[in-house]
Image 1 (cartoon, rainbow, N blue to C red):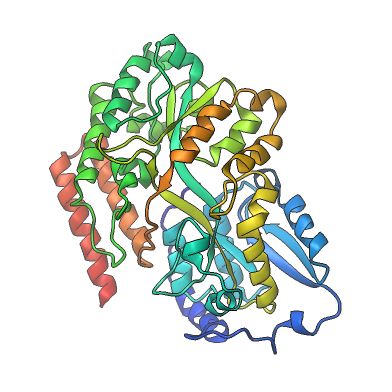
Image 2: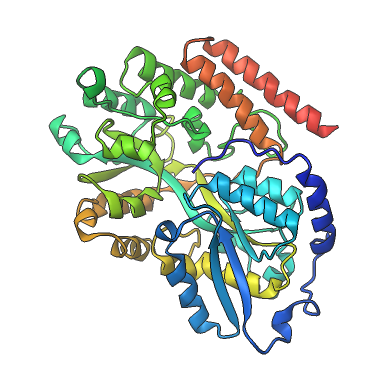
Length: 447
């Protein structure tokens, strides 16, 4: 679900023209060009994302909306047969450049979202929100404002926690954690690691995403990201150094977490590693609840995201979302906005697969809706009590909307992390080089 850097050379020039057609500094609801104001027949609104039908249950979701909105026909178009967000966003970029119909679009990360706002692909929503008396900070768990303006609302909410194989916990005589630190996590990993060679069971697994290179930083309430909103580096944060040192010790010294080299060389998929029993613990996002409800192989329990310091608040975790907005070149912006508003509030619960970023959503009902869409045998393997207890203590950190060039900063940071975790440079050089490269990118984009 993660993305590498998208190179938008040439595309920005095209999208500047799009911005001139569909975006202004003080947008108004243009009912003169909005066919929803005059059309007698239902207007068709396209919702475009990367989810497959199996991943998103979109047909039933849009059908539920269409039943209560007879003047609109909403259809969902998947931009990826594999359900791959990178492929999907590339196709959305091509649609924006070609001028094909786009109405409701979504992006899976803050950096990707920021890039498309900078390219003029998304319509400002402030006038629509004002008309509906919606204060985003009051309604949603995350605040996706960019320079004081809103171009999207939070869709599927992603909060992190730890999945644990209950059978392996019981075998090691370890209780289900309800509050713990990363050092505690490392101790659990030691006790859960056993065997040798291809049959070795590791206590822990960390994937290649940048979230796994900044483990402790993910629970920094003020800035849980490797750069600050202005693009300046956040690598000086001691939580970054701690995170990299922890991974190195677990993977290369204690050998209690799958080594980075194996993850990359064997092209490991984190789901398969957990389902296959190669790891007893997996720090991941709450989207896995819906997947477990369809694919669970054993009893799974849940624990809060580990803390950096024992005195930190319990449950602090990075908060992410799908950013759902209106295309700047949509000819039915009001109707598209109406769907965005519905989907990001009631709709996600109707969808029954994901967790909502709407503050008024009932967590227990949200869980039950997700489990209801699962397979009974697999749902029975999900420990609902530990899941609910974990979700109720979760506290998402402040959302950082980085500059449009942040994906390049992420890429350069991860290059240095790889050199460190594969033993090609020490921690100090990794930190210093990453800082320099991140600052160089910021300076080159400030010109």
